[in-house]
Length: 617
Image 1 (cartoon, rainbow, N blue to C red):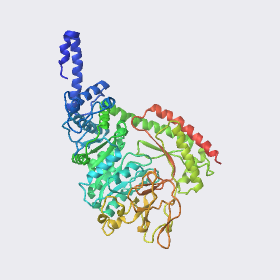
Image 2 (image 1 turned 60 degrees about the vertical axis):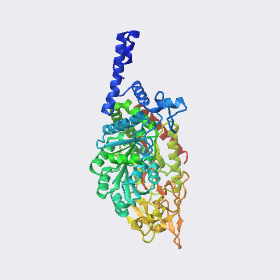
Image 3 (image 1 turned 90 degrees about the horizontal axis):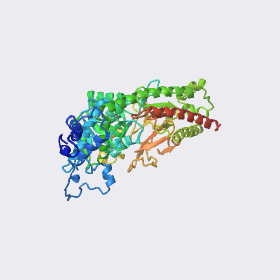
Image 4 (image 1 turned 180 degrees about the horizontal axis):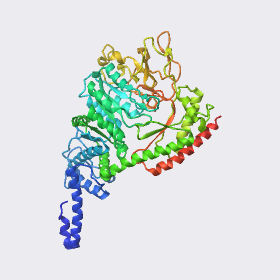
């Protein structure tokens, strides 16, 4: 697309002056493309649709399947039957990577290879704009966050000792995180969150993570999996402190930064973690951060060799659809557009939180303080349970009622069922009014410790660790010799860490190993013959019969089993959380108009729920 090309030859057809003007316009486009290839960064200003389309057509023409006169005699020549599919993909059909490396160049697809190489550089620049300046390499991949974490764990296998089979997982109640560990063939050592002193915010139990490394031994630990962005009342993990701990102990560290790029707090934590400690990789979603369709993620690191190792771990080629979506979006955002979205989200969060405070004053609810979580907001719903318990819902007495709830009072089964009915009504009523994304989490105050007969004679409480793990014999893909109870590491993992409260746990001996009930959704890990049954903090008790077998005393309430790990109060990131709540979020791309429309619907549903309570008396 050089200046003075074929348009100049049309001067005698349309007039020389008109041809010169057209040629100048074409040259401007050509200069725009050349600047992108030279700078290899996000354009300062967004590209329009025509510029993006013209550039993609230029790249597609470089692939062999689009060469004029090309004759393909191989098994895979980029043939597409449907013209609609071809247009949807801008005539790219070769995907990305080769059989041994997802980032490798393809001789038959120079255009597709250039598309992927440019996208990698634009993504890295976008990460820098968001605030993680310490990042040195990025790998966009055409699959979501969970599978990206699995790929990271698989790549770490080549740099960690063969005995490394545990991943220490700072608890977040999101299924994909736990499943990503077992999909890679490793075993999770779950470390529960701790509540902030005198508050509701759930924070990292750094001491318990350190204890887990010492107990399991560093050579048996593949990595620590931490999380930044998450649903309130959980706050971002102290990934900077975890990174320093991992560096000191020689343990790898992977950060789940799923939608953290849009939050300056999360980005600052990741940046400091890379600068001061060890971060092998951090993973973020493309749809949550850059407003693309679901199906893509970005794996990044401060160490380019780590990203190269991850790219080489992926088996075979991959589709280019999510990469193409991300490339187009980044060009049409530009740096100015990305900065504008980040600023708008930050301002909108502060405004929306202020409006929710006003709603809480009208309804007798409250915002649960989580100062380090600047995306998600949790609202106390315990006032929904007050009427069935004969307590007042007026503003004058609501505060006292809430405080009673936080003292750890155990609700009766009838109260629990009624509360679940009201919470279900509340959430479904909002959904029927086209309010999506709100999460309702039922929680029940429970005793701080289980009754004495729930523990074996040799059991004891650990004041700091609150992790949940499975017996080593249950680990899939590990030979029996590696799981032998006579090994030095299995003596630690032969017991089950039984959470009894946030930040404390009980330890049961091998008698606690029993078969867990299968999950209807397939969440119990396939092939696991022996799974740890857990004391669910007053809701799932066991007693020992004279023969030493286990006997259920009470059915679990609000529990979920995932990959053999059983969690109570699932969704709250904590074994015991004192109040039920709902969460709302102000994510990137949210508009003030939709949040304004949400507020009156939210108030209306609260009134309807109160009427539903009165109807049950």
